[in-house]
Amino acid sequence: MTAGAHDAGGGFGRSAGANAVRGGAVIVGAVILGLILMARGIDDSTAAATDPDITTTTVAPAATDQSTPDEATTITTAPPQGESTSSTLGAQRPTSEVLILALNGTVPARGGVAGRLRDTLVSNGYGSVDPKNADTRGPSVILFVEGYESDALAIAALIGVDPVAVVKPFDPATSPIADTQGAHIVVMVGDDEVITS
Image (cartoon, rainbow, N blue to C red; front, side, top):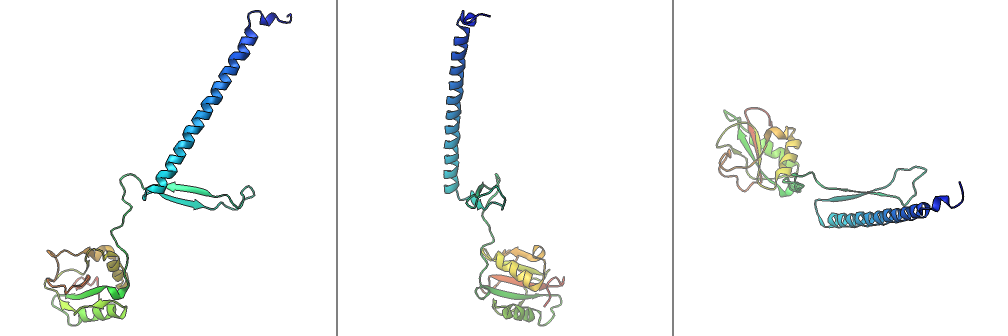
């Protein structure tokens, strides 16, 4: 092969030039793609800063030989589609701010049941109205007015009953007593012995 024989049709020069153009196009494409991805990352971090449903957590690295002390990982999470992040429980109040009504719902009415229950709750700091016999007897129940669900759950835990079985929102139509005397929570001892005093 003689020198320059390959250049007769300009193949080597043309081939090198075409490769240089292709290489330049790949580099330009990579730079544009990088800029697009960076812009998206900035947009996502802005959304995370303004969207109250998105949580950002910074996690310190595990101690390894490869990590440096100032490394950290940021994790951004959003709630799954269709799920609400708000809670209907409300904050639990100091017991002194929760007014309870203890009811005797036993049949026949066993004397002193509501009074003993009231005494237990008052000794744990709860406020109380006068204990009463229920107008309508039935199973044991803990009823709460809106915003007092966490307090009703705390009372269920205090008296040692399963909250799933007894804690329910107050409904005047099905209430075991017409006059709650302004109580936030009604606790009724029923014949089922779920709540005892």
